[in-house]
Length: 493
Image (cartoon, rainbow, N blue to C red; front, side):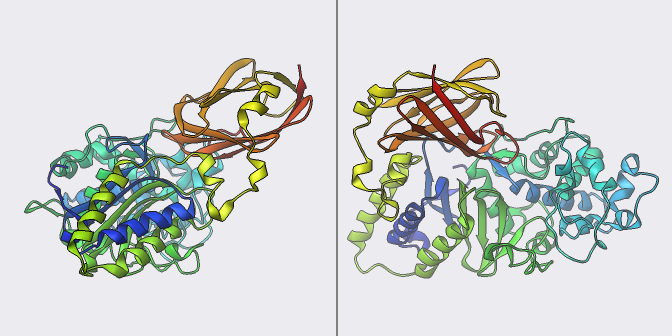
């Protein structure tokens, strides 16, 4: 990577066995990891991508986008285009209703940066079809601004809109021109837009894991890059400090350590650029260390804390431990590189047969003999809210295909039987990686990982009778794929 030194782990005081243990623990937790990067003393000592993800793959970073807004606010303050204690309403007179509540007009830019708005939650999610920015100013407040912490993505969306209103550029373009291009940030990164043409400043960043690493490095270096101060050091120090307590509002340990400007504090005197689902840049100034992950922890209770704990307990506790045998250290380092290069998304067959989640041996029948009974048989479905009318399963030696009719259109999901097969998820035309397996003699399971602008999964369980099928569909995704949720029943046509 340009401007980044690559070195073996021990050169940065990290034994290779510690990173092996970290990877082992994540596998045991059955977390769907997408990438892992570890840097210490400005040395990149581990970098791995879970195929089909690659170093160049743009990944949805969700709320890491918030941290980008905070950087933009710091730059605009330096340019004297804003003051952090300016009221946000003064910049959006066209969005303010005549009967505006006084707490709305009292909110400052600093309040928004610190998540101390007068709203308890994201205002635009109440109706995504209405102006997202306007919703922030017309929603009835619940408390006085500048007081308590409540995570409010609409605040970040408004901050992004402020950048674009003042610069007449997209937020990310502004940052690229001011600083990111100098750092080697990916040229094709972008921020998703909503239906109104606004950048989704609270969650829409599409970037690479290496971009997150560069972001973390800039923050650890207090805004300095190759001898140039790209942004005020005092602003970065303030941005990354604990400005807002959130012990009572956090649902898990990692969200109770305090908040700065659009980023989270963490244990070990660290801070985190934190995106939903495991998009993390964990920065530990005292250790001069960064962990970057991309993942899909949605649906895994405490999934992000599992990543934190694995990192803190398997790697942090072993820092600066000198190996007793350097020859063995070299062997472990070589095997670590091989392991990092061979990473891939795990098919369901492996997840469902691990020692911690093993079904009885009799459940695993020969899928090819069972397949003959149901292969390509079409099942006509009873009326259902999703609009599915037929479904059919086809299995071959290494892969399979689920076909279905939805709203009069025919679609298919292709999947691997012992591996994840990359393809396109129907209806939404999003890239996915899918696998399937028999859970029992009559129950087949399919899981599609969404690996596009949406991160999540769609899971389908098919239970076959002599002449009928019952299907259960479950989607884990924030805003779409609603039809892939619930039950279906059908008989052979």
